[in-house]
Length: 425
Image (cartoon, rainbow, N blue to C red; front, side, top):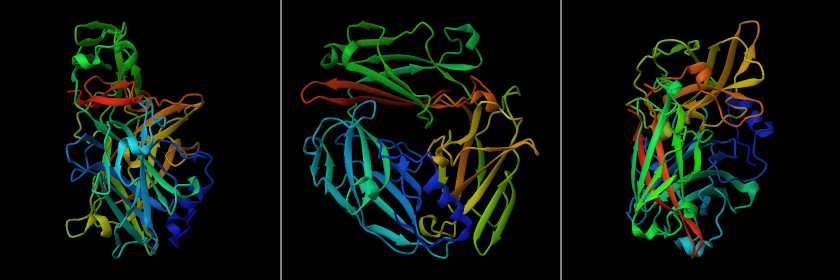
């Protein structure tokens, strides 16, 4: 693991990353940053920072990966691509079956930061490219590493999708769900998939569907099977429906500039070590009237001032979050959004102070515009509960991502044959 010379303001974060028990002991097929020097990892369709990392097979479109490496020494990082099953296990395919060209390549596009504290090197990669092309649809991982792909050399992994649009997905969110007690609270996904004759064989066994809400993975509905089949139409009519918590619109703050305090910011502290941004104290929104707020559905948008190049002149700050709440026993509160890769880990966990009756958290973030919410996770669960702090409202505008997989027999792998991105309202 590399250690760079960095300012004191982030030294505690580096130590926490090294010694936190939440750090994965092995490389997993997930959105994980393994090297604490690596910050602000973005993966999206080329030219659209707010898009999902999804491309159509053979379309010629590219994804764009970028990240900052804290320090003043440039490295030549390498990358490879791994095909995965619908549930993100490494598939049995050999790389020669889904990759054309090289099986690994270098990331040669990088720039040194200018007048930024701490210093960093900004890296970018656009793929698929002439050196590495994709031949099959499905779930994929891009793995970036130093020198060789041994676990100790891996700096990050990110998920992305390659789709063959061979199905037509019809989805909607009715006002009245099947369970009437959910009315005005939960969001039920009514789902119907029209498939060509190609998928008429064993659809109950070979077709499965996953649905994500915003960028979350913890509450994802996976391996959904059709309840009825009529000609080439698969219907998903579960007794209680496919139901998600409505939640609430995302909170936000703007740190595109450290020269002024946007409405959500209480104080900006600047010294030789860098910046510290203190947000206004948040309160519990559960039980309060729903308020429409324009948001990015949990996303972040990395952007510095107009007179700055965001890639290499954007600066970092420690951002302090404060939530006014009594202590919730047997559970932890986490900051959740793309600002922390939707992870409920030690870095995003809030710490309770009985003296002030408040929860405190801190994240290290680059200049930009950020969405976030608070979720509560019980000790024995993996799914966070957004309703306890934020409330539960059918009116919330959430984004849903629907993935349709088909299990091919020869060669055996999960094809991604349908994809739909839809807003709840």
